[in-house]
Image (cartoon, rainbow, N blue to C red):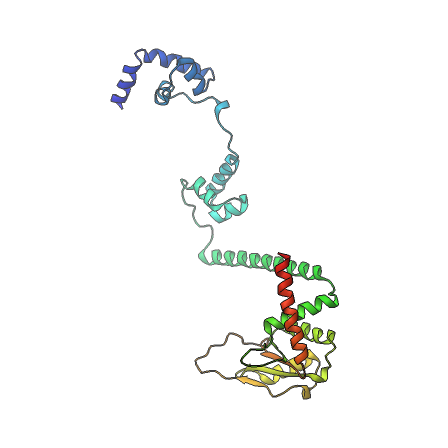
Length: 289
């Protein structure tokens, strides 16, 4: 530093005189740029040396929008608040809180580990409740926006459902008949409404339950019979899915009822209509874009 000072003083012979003038200008409220222009000193380093120890005038300081938040965060930290609590209170980023208060001593815990866990669990429970409420509200709004379906809309929806979940004809295996499989009661209801729209007589419809052998097959049969409003004679023998002892099933509990297979007899012509409709949907969708 002495060598640097000597260099500055050597370049500016009247350094002390310049410094007196610079300090006077600084105290008069001049900015560095104004002092530079008036003294014709264009070295930033020299300018800094000339006004060293003199604070800049207030008008040159840029206002910082987060200064109030920073001061409040530091005040809360001194009161023993945690980063998470400060973040929630000030509604700012946790990284900002850390930057603002990291030089302050870590507060002593205000509660026991058990109390901390209880508070955390309570906070998580409130968060999940809020999220669940938001999810349900979104679903309710979306459902209300659909309204009643026209016959054309139901026909197109049913054709799309079938092509996603129904059996399809193959060049190597002719399967021109309606065979629909699903575990979602809503999908089953829509598909049956679609069959009704197409005036498919219910005596042409057969049902079959498919379920894991370790599940309650009898309860599933009763559930599906009630859901579709069909008598037992409309159901064929239940298919039990076998698995090894090592298989770990996740679809368990009272809500697991397997899948329902819906088969329509004498439905080759209907199948061809569905396949043609699907191709029409594909063409219509691609031309729309």
